[in-house]
Length: 264
Image (tube, rainbow, N blue to C red; front, side, top):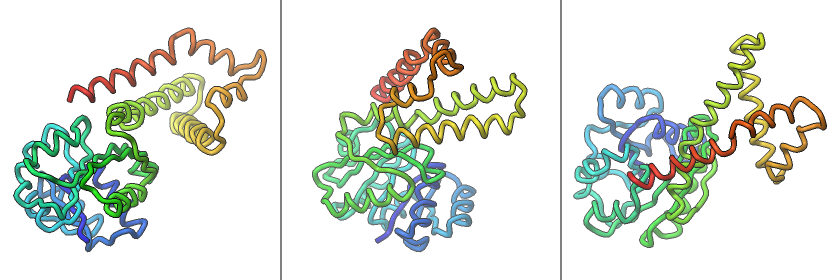
């Protein structure tokens, strides 16, 4: 079994690192290519994988081909590889906004397609990936792809109709969280805390809070109420957030992201 990456950017590197770290596949089982020789050389040196000179070469050798390029480059990539793709290969696309039907039409033939929306916490093996497939992908192939995705986080099957929603709530949301951490740290710095320490306190609080949601099974509102003592400091802070439209702003941001994904 050969796994091929077309595109060796941050997400591809996160996937390769997780797959190798979990022992699902070895470096000898993974090949890839990128737009520049410099990128290929760096990835080959870091992970020990073989890099090839063209998209077509990767598609010819690989059994599972991961399209890890930006949506605007997919047409060109598919044109490069379509003659080397047959019904024995599985195509995995991580591009936002490009549906299975769109991919199928670009290949101009029946192709096994798995569509994935991962996110950047995959870089620290805490990613969250949404997955769906077309009818040509059998259960064994689909299970294996999900195992690969599970090597760097969680992988959940969703209907394709929700993929754009996944982009808003998961794919792009690390950026919102980073802004929140940065804003909290800025306030702590204003209060006199050294910046490095401020980032550590803010980030650890977000990490721990997220873990409480996932592990306790409690509603986020219930967990919030547990922190808000009567006439205490937290409820005053919550009041300010509500007064300034915190929840509505976050909802609007996620909705804008979803709509952008739908328009790609």
